[in-house]
Image (cartoon, rainbow, N blue to C red; front, side, top):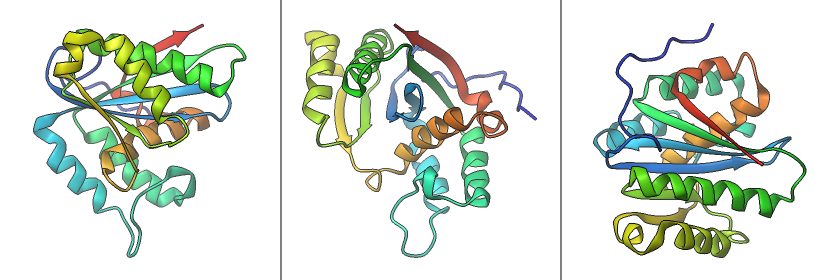
Length: 192
């Protein structure tokens, strides 16, 4: 059963104007989707701690495609209870992966101009990093590049990268998984 929307949403989404960190991941399975999880800087420490507690002995990070269903449910409960806001960027039509990614990264960068997040963290993909950086640089413009830091990290470097990974997986799988995190998805942007 879908959880109801929190009455007092976190002021950290791409549509809000408070300092936040944006964590970005994608799914290429089916429709190309980029998920941005916006998290207020005030809750980052607690959120990271809660997520790290889900690691099994010897595990460095979570990757939703490799987790058991019970592990997925535990992580999704944490995510659903976090004061985060998620924006989903979806590309329609048949485009190559790089072209679709460019559309999504440019769109989220344009949203960042208004929302002014403190940091945008993308999951590292060495084959795309130089392109991401160029697209962000071009879209953010000179003034916003001073205010918004953007960087690429490996998934084991920051557990907050597990959040957009999990949500992208849920979107791809649909119901009932999507119902688990529907309350944190505040906006979907469909791109041509």
